[in-house]
Image (cartoon, rainbow, N blue to C red; front, side, top):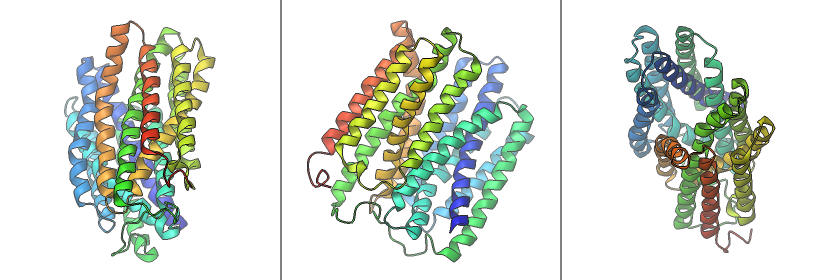
Length: 393
C-alpha cells in the first residue's frame, strides 16, 4: 500500500514539475527572442485554454474505474509533447507542444483526484477525501514551484530533454500503479463514490453537499484571484525596492512551500471544514499576509508575508479540492469544475492586477484589492456555514 501511495503522488509531483518547467522555458525563450508581451503571455494562455476546454469533457466521462486509464493517456500525451519540444524546436511551433501539454494536464488532473481518493478510501474510509486533498495540494504545489526554479538553471535543450525523461517516468509510474492497483483493490470495479471523510454522524442531503461544493468553488476561484496578484505584482515590488532576484524568487517559492505544507498538515482533517471559527482564522491569515505585501518596505517584511499568506492559500486550495471530492454523487463534476475555474481565473486576473496597478499608479493596489477579496471569501463561508447541524459538531 505504501508503494502504491508513493507512486501515486510521485505522478502528481512529476506532472506539475514538468508543466511548471515547460511553461517557464517557453515563456523565457520567447522573451529572449524579443517577442511581444502578448506573445510571451500567450504561451501560458494557450496552455490554459486547452486545459479549460478539455477538462469539462473529461469530467463527464471519468469514473473510479477508468480514472487510471485517463491518467495513462495524459502521460502518453506528455511524452508526445516533450518529444515535440526536443525534436521540432522552432520558436512558434512551441505553441503546438504547449497546447498538447495542456491536453495532457487536463487528462491527468480530474482523474488523478478521483483515483487518489479511491486509493485513500481503500486505506482509511474515514479520511479518504481529506488525505487525498492534502497530499494532492502538497505535491502539485511543490512540483509546479520546483519545476520553474530548477528548469530555470537548465539550458533550453537540456530542459526539454529532462521533460521527456519526466514524461516517460510518469507513464512508467502509471503503468506500475495499474499493476499494484489490481493487487490492492483500490479503485476496484463497482466501488461507489462515498463521502467517507465527512463525520459519520453528519447526515447531509445531496443539496447540502452541493451547496458546500459550490462554496468550495467560490473560495477557490476568489482565492486564485488573490494568488494571481501575489505572483504577478510581487516581482514588480521587488524590482522597485532593488531586492535581489534570488530573494524575489525565494519569496514566491516560500508561498508555494508553506501552501503545500499547510495542505499536508490538514490531511487528517475531520470537521474544521464545516465550522465558522476556522474560516475566521483563515481570512485573518489571508488579509494579514496581503497587507504585509502591500505595506512592506524591505525584504524583512516579505518573507513573513509569504509564510502567513501561504497558510491562507494552502487552506483555500484544500477546501476547493475537499468539498468536491467529498460529494457522494457528483464529485467528478465538481472536481472538473475546479480545474476550469482555476484556469479561467488564472488567465484573466494577472491582466486585471496589471490594470489596477496602472490605473492607481501603484503596484501595491492589487494587494489591497486581494485583501478585500479575502473578506468576501470569509463572507461566503459565513453565509454557507450558517448555524445548523454543521455548527453543532
